[in-house]
Amino acid sequence: MEDNCISYVKDNDHKFAFFYGSGFRIDKLPKGTRIIYPPRPIKKIANPYEAIENALENPINSKPLSKLLKPKMMVTIAFDDLSLPLPPMKKPDLRKIAIEIILQKLEKAGVSDVHLIAAICLHRKMTRKEFEEMLGKEIVKRFYPDRLYNHDAEDKKNIVYLGKTKHGDVVNINRRALESDLVIYVNINFVSMDGGHKSFATGLCDYETVKHTHNVKALMNSKSYFDPEKSMLHYILNRQGILIEKKLKTFRLEMTINNDMFPWHLKSLQKRHHELSILDKFAIRLAVSFMNLLNPALQRKLASIIRSNYGLIGAYAGDVNKVHKKALEDNFMQYEVEINGQCDVLIGGIPDMSPYNVNSILNPVLFVCLVHGYFFNLYRGKPLIKKNGVLIAVHPLEEEFNKIHHPSYIDFYENVLTKTLDAKEIEKIMRKVLQNMKNM
Figure (tube, rainbow, N blue to C red):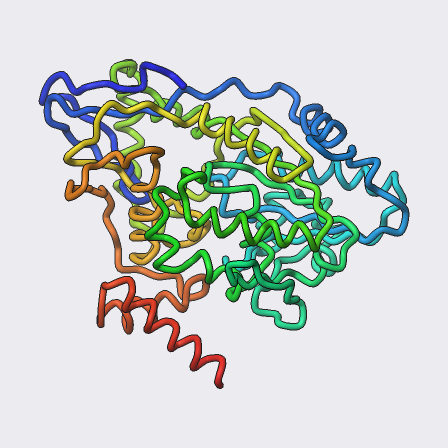
């Protein structure tokens, strides 16, 4: 954690570039405004192949992966979908590297019954092209579609009831995962909300499972979704995860990355305002002017081809709790900034970039989710903003939806939000809708 991530605006004439949807906006900030910058990227591990191999063969509180494998085993490799990291990684994706290494070990051990499952829960399904982008054409050609596919949370034949926690939380799980002799989960721990028991208890489950975490009570009683120790969301996920661990034989691999977000031609956007050279300022103005010439569809198209420069900073394998603890240490070391005092007004430029609109549109519902669920919750301890303070989200907010990726959002936006904005009332309405669907 750095100690120089805080700066103050020294005059009223300085201009700043804000994210503004798929483009940017240049504007001034009042003198004295406190600016919070992220810590600089931690130096990435030079050889990710070696680091991942070392993690798999020197796991925490577990036998080495190669020692767990036996001929004729049924093995399932589950992995995080394209909802993270954001923007997507430049090639090779760390999931590709890890899965290639694991597949080599399986082949060497004589294991041929292998399935690869994208742990999407109720996220939209990944396409073949998106699988190729993440895992490479060779793996896709070898396994897709019979042995490389999306988890289907609505396929009742392939969802199995595991039981209930002592608190009454239902847990249903992917049939293939349950029937496997070993399930290896490959995770990129992008932020502290991800990984750990959440990987199975959301990714490979169904609505009846995730409804215990995705409801008004659980979400409103989480102090911060990014502070797992004080999050009811994670408290419930952990007790569901404990039940899953009792029923399934699992092996976890969690990989952590730095925050080196932008490729070389956009590196100016990562600099602090007082570090910008004349050339940097020119590059930012050029990018802003060019993007502003484009319509929203072209802006999204251009933004979608950006690939981040994220690098591996840690790889940990073995026991879920001990592995996740190490991953969280990396997350906080990379992202945490100590703030002295809450603010009255919090301003943030909001990009068209959320886990739920990759290669798609950030519709108004997803915008609210991104601002309230993610941007506001980026804290540990106390929120950045005081109670009854003002949050200004800088975004064009177009009333636009992707009818293929988010058809249900349109009905929700037009037929539910027009009746009420009260979260508890909305939840009652949606429960009635779900019950009516079950009765059909």
